[in-house]
Length: 150
Image 1 (cartoon, rainbow, N blue to C red):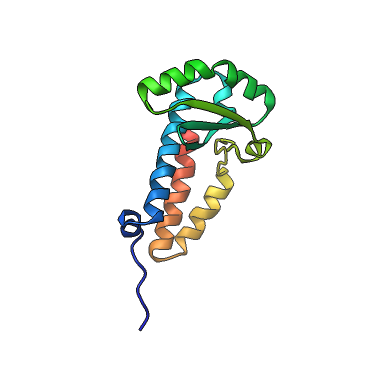
Image 2: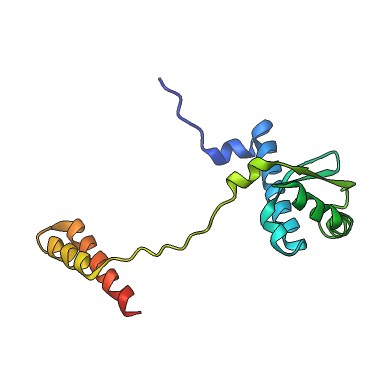
């Protein structure tokens, strides 16, 4: 008889390495968010909190120029992090990781719109289609005409 898979939430709350990894990942995500709020300007888009080990926060950035800018703000950032978030923090290291630039998400607004002709074709198809698919096609065609009105 096959053993059923365990629920992921159960695995995360049991003792072992997985809960520790999940906790550290959450800590790093929260620290990344906190650091980006404490720093100002375009530098926030060029950095990522990479690790926290033995009281040292490791921040990665895309170029040496951004690393220099972060190093100028490092002492103020360390003092704020110690006061607000991590009192056990002893120092901050800034490292250059050019590969980080490849993974920065580009936010794109969806500008795709359905033309009037396409909406008419979808509506005509919906008239000849029965069931839930026909209803969904009608809603899609109606949505296209609503977007044009607003």
